[in-house]
Picture 1: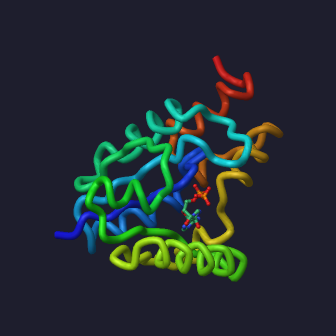
Picture 2: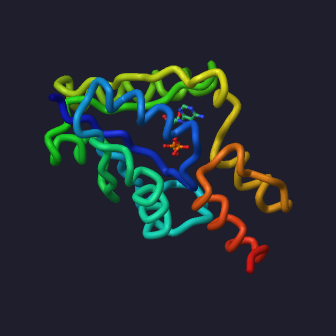
Length: 161
Ligand code: ADP
């Protein structure tokens, strides 16, 4: 089957990311979920923490592997032999950004296609940044992220045992 790269910041991974990954792995094998190590934005979790949380939450999902990367996404896809890049689309704002990125990527390497998964309605409002904000204010994020991520957020914000 075709190897796919699912890149992102995953700061932290949410149930929305996992839903898209679970659907991607029905079409592509393996799906490499790759944590971008130099996002141009401030992150809450270090790359090591983000990788560890992703590994923990995907350990029972056959066909999903987790890596970190630092290069241009298209270059990394080429390096690992991925012909497909997987991304998720929640709304028109995602679309505007992703459409532009996909066209840039296609210009850089026409052999690599970007495949989009429409967010499940249940998760279309869900983003890592919303989860971080709720957790920072002491809210309950257990409906939005796996238990290990909820614990990691509680630890980050000094709310655990
Ligand atoms: P970025 O890579 O832009 O920093 P993220 O790490 O938050 O963004 O997300 C990685 C990918 O997963 C993006 O394509 C994003 O649109 C998608 N995604 C994020 N949240 C969801 C969700 N709730 N449902 C489906 N896809 C999502």
